[in-house]
Image 1 (tube, rainbow, N blue to C red):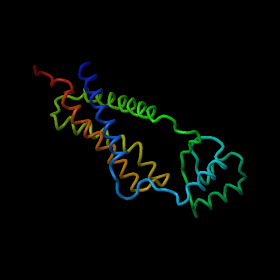
Image 2: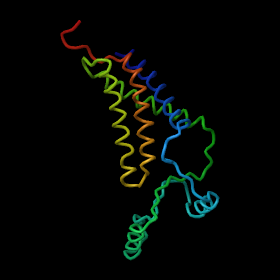
Image 3: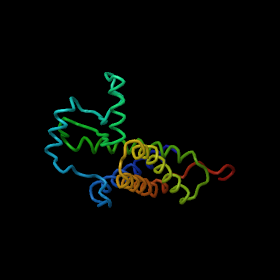
Image 4: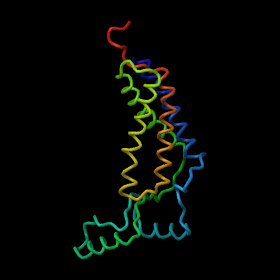
Length: 191
């Protein structure tokens, strides 16, 4: 079981990481999932002038503690009219991309380790059944991690479709390798 856990996790993480890298760097996803502002220099200046530190920002923000009830009402009215923005702002430079690749791989490794552990708890699944089991884990990760973004924060359909494709295809490809080495528990009474 330990050999299956280690080998399945390592191979699955490598495939999942590579599939994600290919999905983000090389696949031309349809529908413009990541859009550009018409004047990026003006947006950079506005962000630097109005975002005091890195973090997640929402516009308009009805959750500010310093607002009067009249100001909160005005924000709610503005929310109904738009525009609305949910943005992650990093004021500092990105720095070396190697750090992000390392963290990305380690994240994939932890996720695949958990999926491999779950797969090891199954009993009597065929190769196709094991592939389906791990692929469904990917669907759950997508749904739990991204459908709220679409619902609450207005992430575009194109962005959500890109995430669905990148995540589920990655997990499907990882499952093909994982299911080869991770067989689960033996069927009770079999030798």
